Each structure stands twice: as structure tokens, then as C-alpha cells.
Length: 249
Image 1 (cartoon, rainbow, N blue to C red):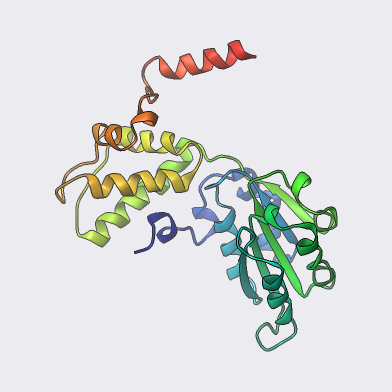
Image 2: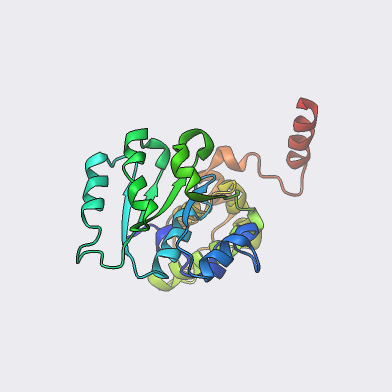
């Protein structure tokens, strides 16, 4: 069974949580995608903010063969294997390479792509959680458009949680509910990472008991005690945090 976060991965730009500065009406990245541009792209920002999701959406809009490498496990031979398929029956219209965690590729591995980016036989979409201006080879940066992804707010996370709960109920023949304040707590626990918030929802759903048992704040307290200790939307914890930040400045 696939994780819930993969199962409900958005299929359209409208379904992506957050990133309105990139994907809202008239935003530059949205215009590039909708125009069919084959610009090399580098996405950077925190985990769980939609970088891989958006790369998948872009891939579906092209006629190129999609290759996916994760730089934490891939090596130079994997890059050579991708390049070997250029101009073959495997990729007659070129290749769209999605390279996840590009910061783990060394300079030689990144340089091996340059010739093919130059002539357009490979279009690169790379993602990283680190600042690409420190970790990505300058020649790749100069041939790419860089876009920063931001942490998703709790409010922007709520629709994904509601959709996830509906899917879990549908798949399992249940009618489990969660009050808005419970979903808001999950969104806060996610701390800008939609994948993490959906993981909390999935664990809470299966731990709730009988098919119609609701998901409660008390259950979240058991599952994620350290995070829930600071969840105090109507109390003082929120203001104490802001006060501490102000004093530190």
C-alpha cells in the first residue's frame, strides 16, 4: 500500500498546496509551464513543499521520455545510462531528467550533463533542499531558471488533509471524522511540510479504533506528544514563542 502522501499527490497546478508566488495566476513559473517552455529548472526549498509533485506535473505536459534519478543513490554510471538513450528509440523526442537532491552530485557528475543541456537533448528539472548557489555547479545554474519553494502554511495544508481523510474513508469503507481544530493541529505539526502532516493523519486514522471512531486531539497527544505540547492555538504558547523570538532579536 502506497503512503497517503503519494496516493493523493496533486495532478494539476490547481491542486498544489501553497506556492502561490510561483503558481498563482500570472506567476512566472506558471506562465513558463503553461506556455510549454522547455527551460531547465532548479527548485529549492524545504521538504514536503511540492518540488517533486510539480516536476511530475510538468513531465506529463511534455512528449519527452521521463527519467528520474535521486542523487543520494545515483552515480556517474546512472548519468551515462541516461545520456546513452539520447537520440535513440527510447527517447525520440528528447529526455526530461528529474534529478532529486542534486546537491549530492559532485562537480564531475553535474558537468557530464552540460553538453546535452546545451543542445536541448536533455531538459533538466533538479530539486534541492539546500541553497543551489552554494551547491550547484555555476555552469548548470547559468543554463537554468531557479525557483524557491516556501514552507506551506497550516491554512494551505488543510485542504490536503481533508482530501486525505476522504480517501482513507473511501478506501477502507469507514466514516471516520476529525474536527477542524484536529486537522489544524496536524497542519501545525507538519510545520510547513505537507508530507509530514499527511503522515500524521494516516497514523492517526489507523490508530483511532473502530471504523466510526473520530480522530481526536487526545489521540494526537499520544501519537505526537512533543509537538502537541506546544499546540495552544487559543492559549499563550503562540504568544510566548513570538515573545521569545522578539527578545532574541
